[in-house]
Image (tube, rainbow, N blue to C red):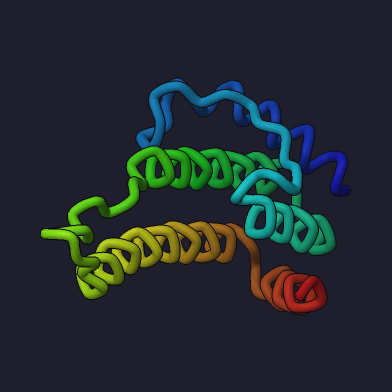
Length: 138
């Protein structure tokens, strides 16, 4: 089942890029431990694979993952060290925390959107299985 989802993910990655609102140049991406989205995406794939999803559900979930990765990539591209935290030879801790917190909040919102999207595709029984399998991966 995981193999089926991964294949669907790669196929969706290649097709969804042209219609995705999140990213102009979608490319299939191999999920690995160096990928900052590894935990979220890999956990979703593993948990979904245990729910008995249909081919159509698999395709939709793969499209949602691709869109999430596009949003995540954009957030990471714009993530810069808040240089204006260093003013007049001093370090402004509040400016640094505020800038960092904003990016963190945006990433959390993207993850929450992914989870909500996956749940919208799963039926009630599949949602329960997903929750159990996701929690097992902690």
